[in-house]
Image (cartoon, rainbow, N blue to C red; front, top):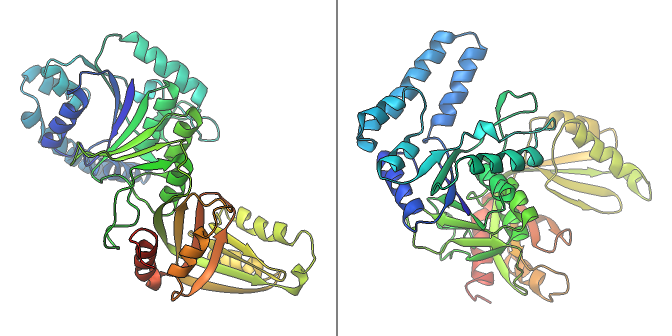
Length: 409
C-alpha cells in the first residue's frame, strides 16, 4: 500500500478535490490518503483558539461561522446527494463522501484514533503503529482510506498537533507505521530543483536525492518538504516521492537511501541569518570555553546553524533572534562579541565526501567575487555551506548554478 499526502492548495476547491479524487483512484490500487484542510483553515482555527483563550466567545463564533460558510459554499458543487450534504452537518469529510458517490470503496480513518505524541511531544511510534494497523484491519476491502493530517492526541489524550512538518509529517509517520511501499507528497511544485527557480535562471528539477541530501535541502530553504518529514521514512527505509498535482505526469523527485557517487545535486539558501562572533584570548588552550558558550544558547533555546572555530575565537550563525540581546549579554562575560545581521546561508548539496577531489574548490571558484563570512565543510558528507550577506544571495546562487550545473568555467 502507498501513502499519499495532498496539501491545502490541492483540496482548496471542488475542482481540485475532484482532481485529487481522480489521481488517487485511476489506477485502482489500494491507498492511504492524508488530506490537509482547505487552504486557510489552520489559520482560522488558530484565530478561534485565540478568541476563546481571551474569553471572547462571540469573536470565536464569528470566525467559526465564516469557516463553516466557506466549506458549505462548495458542497453543492461537490456532492449531489442530499443525504451526503446533510451528513456534513455532523462531520466534515467532503472528499470521502464524494468518492462514495462515485462508487469508490472509501472510508475515513479519524486521525485522533491512532495519531498520538508522547510526553516529549514526539510521535509515539509504538502506539501509532499498533492502532493505525488496527484501524486499517477493522475496515478491510477498501480501495481508499482517508485520514486527516497534522492533528493528533498528546500524551494526556487532549487534541493537539504534531508541532512541525504538518501533514507531510503525518504521511511519513504513517508510511513508517504501516510499512508502506512508498510515500508520495503531492504539492503544486514540480519536485525539488537544483536551485531556487524564483531567483536563478535555468534551474532543473532534481529527479533523485539521498535522504540526507533531501534533509539538507529542506533545512536550508527548499520549501517543498519540511526536514522533520524525512526522518520516519528514512528510518523505515521507505522511499518518498515528491509529485506535482498540476502536472501529475511529471516524474517528480524520488528520495531514498541510494547514493549517487560523484554528483553535486542542488543548491539551497536560507535567509534571515544572524552571525555572532566571540573573540577571547582566554580561549587559547582553555578547556571548557566552548561548553560555556554552548550553554548560553541552550539556556535561551536557540539553535546554531553553522559554527567555525579558531585558536582565539568562535563564530556561529542563528536564525532565531528572539533572545539575541540576552545571548550577546551573556557571551560578553567571556570575550568580545560582534554581531552581523542580514546574512544568508548558501548550501551546496551532493556527494561531498572529502576524498572527492575538487568538489569544494568548484564551489569556492564560483564564489570568488562574493565576500564569504564563514565556511562549513566536513561536518557532513553531503554539504558545504557558505555564510554571505543577504544582498549577495542572488549573485551567489546564479554563479553556483552556472559553475556547478551549466558548464561555466
